[in-house]
Amino acid sequence: MSSTMQEGPGSNGSSTEEISRIQAHARLAPGEIAVGVVIGRTSEYFDFFVFGIACVLVFPSVFFPFVSRLDGMLLAFVVFAPAFVVRPLGTMLFMNFQRRWGRGTKLTISLFVLGIATAGIAFLPGYADIGGWSITLLVLLRLLQGIGLGGSWDGLPSLLALNTPPQRRGWYAMLGQLSAPIGFMIAGSLFLFLHTQLDNADFIDWGWRYPFFVAFAINVVALFARLRLVVTEEYTLALEERELEPIGIVEMLRKQGYNIFIGAFAALASYALFHLVTIFPLSWIVLGETQSVTTVLVVQIVGAGVGILGTIASGLIADRIGRRTTLGSVAVLIGVFALLMPWLLGGGQAAQDAFILIGFALLGLSYGQAAGSVTSNFETRFRYTGAALTSDFAWLIGAAFAPLVALGLSFRFGLIAATLYLLSGVLCTLIALRVYKALGEHD
Image (cartoon, rainbow, N blue to C red; front, side):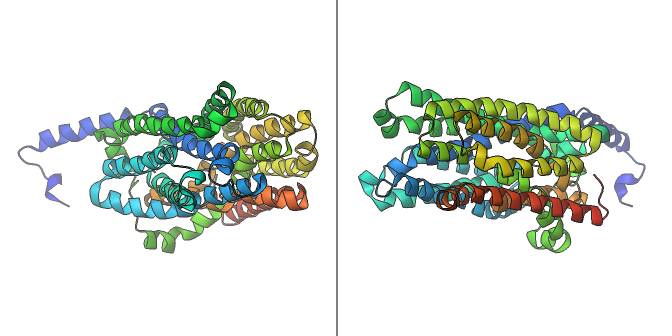
C-alpha cells in the first residue's frame, strides 16, 4: 500500500481532513442535486423550444420568403435538425476539454457557445436584407447551438441517480425531465405575449427577437447556478468517488457501445412523441388555419402544465411497477394515441385540442422515465460519458427530423404518415426493452 496508509507524524491530521471530506459528501442530498439538474436543463430546453416555435411562426417569413408558407416551414425544419446531428460531436469535443482543463472550464465555454449562438440569431438580418447569407448564418449559429448543448453535460443527472434510495429511483429520475415541459411553457408564454401585444408586422420585424435575447440571459443565470454546484469541493469529491469522469470515446464505444444504442432506441417512443406534440401540431394547425396562433399557444401552454403533472406521476408509478415497465406500458399507450392521430389532429378545434392535451400527458408519463431507465446499465465508470451520448443519439434518431418528416409526409400523404412515424418509434422502444430483458438487465 502507499505511505499514506502508514502511521506517522501528521497522520491524525490527514485522517481528520479525510473524515471532514466524507462528512461533507454525506451532506449531499438528492434534492439539492435535483435543483441543479432542473435549473440547468430548463435553460437548454428553453433555447431549443424558442428556435422550434420560431421555425413555425417567424422563419418562413424572415428567412424563406421566396417559397410558399409550407415550403418555408419545411426549410426551417431542415435548419432545425443539424443541432441534433452535431450534438454528439459537441459531447465528444467537450469531454476532451474537461479532461484537459476541468469541468468548470468545460461547462463555462459550452454554455457561452450555446448562449452566444442563441443571442446571435436575434441579431440576424433577414433574407430581404442580405439574401442567402442570412440562411447560411442561421445554419452556422444552429450548429453552434448543437455543439454547445452537447458540451453542457455536467454529470449531475448521473450523480443524482447514484445518490437516490433504490425505492425512490423513479421519483428522482423524473425530476430532471420536468425541465422539458417547464422550458416549453416559458418559451410558449413568451411568444404568446409578444404575438398578442404586437401587430404582425412588428412581430415579424423585431418582436420575435426578444425570446432569443431572453434565452441568453437565462443561460447566464443557469451557468452560475450550475457552477455553484459542480465546482465546489463536495460535489467534485462526490463525482470523483462515483467515477463520474469523462472516458475516451474509443474505449467507451468498444466496451459499452451496445448500451448507448440500445438505450437510445429504448427511449425512442418518448423522443419521437416529443416534437409531435410540441412543434408539429403548431405547424399543422397554423398552416391549416383551423385555429388562431394565439389559441393554439394557449392550449399548448396548458398542455405543458399537463405534461408537468404527467412527469410527476411517472415518478410515482415507476417506483411502484419499475421504470422500464412504466416506459414499455406508456409506449403501448403512445401506439394507441398514434392510431387516433388522423381523427384528432385532422378534426375540428376540440379534437385538435384533445390531441395536444393527451399528447402532453403521455409525453410526461413516458419522458419522465426515458433517461434513468436505460442509462442505469452502464458500468459506473462509463456512466458519465454513456448517459450523455445515449441522450444525444436518442434526440438524433427520434426527434431531430420529427417535425420535418411529420409535416412533409402528412401534407403529401395525410396524417397517417405521422401515425406510422410515431408507431415506428413505439416498435423500437418495445424491441429495445425486450433486448434489455433478454440480456438479464435489472430495472
